[in-house]
Length: 123
Image 1 (cartoon, helix red, strand yellow):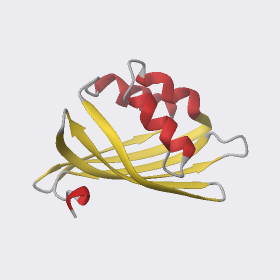
Image 2 (cartoon, one colour):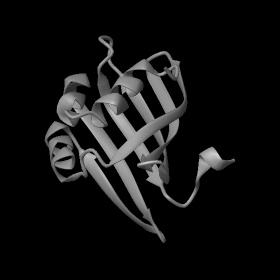
Image 3 (cartoon, helix red, strand yellow):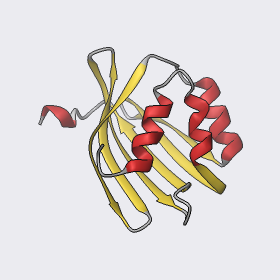
């Protein structure tokens, strides 16, 4: 566990055989942005609410990338993590994620940024 228990559950679910399980972790009125860098200055910003997250889940590769949280923290209703994604054993990208939780511990807002241009775990 990283010190950010909700985000730990989020990434465990997204890497599981049932990635749509993350939908069980979101609050009513949920909003998100995932800035998905692919290198060379190229990125896509997936953003919106629950319906947009369902669309994001439908288009993503399943069972290919895994998330490895290197560190995490919680302060009040906010959780932050730093990690990397891997394709098998190979580095794919570094990511940061920040979530604000409601009083029940569900994700109200989520910001994730990822880039293959910096391998933070190698430092």
